[in-house]
Image (cartoon, rainbow, N blue to C red):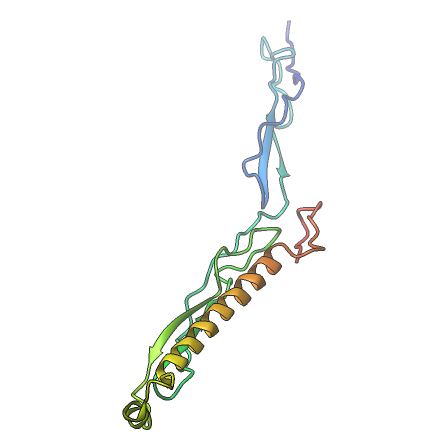
Length: 175
């Protein structure tokens, strides 16, 4: 007696090949319900079925770009400071990825030639006067500390700003 083959039920879908940005998952079936015998026909159709899965966008965490060149020194003579910047753009954070960690600026002390009247003032100093060099150094220290506090405050505000909404839909780019 000739018996044609018939498909069994589909298996469960296997695990998706990717967790985000799209993957593929498969399921299978066999021609064994019953198997063809005595020259019976094999089942018509495919043994494997595939479908796309996890089409949501992957989170992309921000990474720092390269430092820009140092800005000019903020003084033309004596001690001063200069700054350089960098951006969180290599890549920028997308799809609820995290911001870059750390500061986006860097400061350093720069030294220019001696100020022309600094030598004259040094010769005229008396114990009753504070040296302009000391006053300038104190001003630079205050400037650097103020800048650091301002930048830290900016970073904390930017990182933990009120009103920042969590994305419930990972397909949406939250800003």
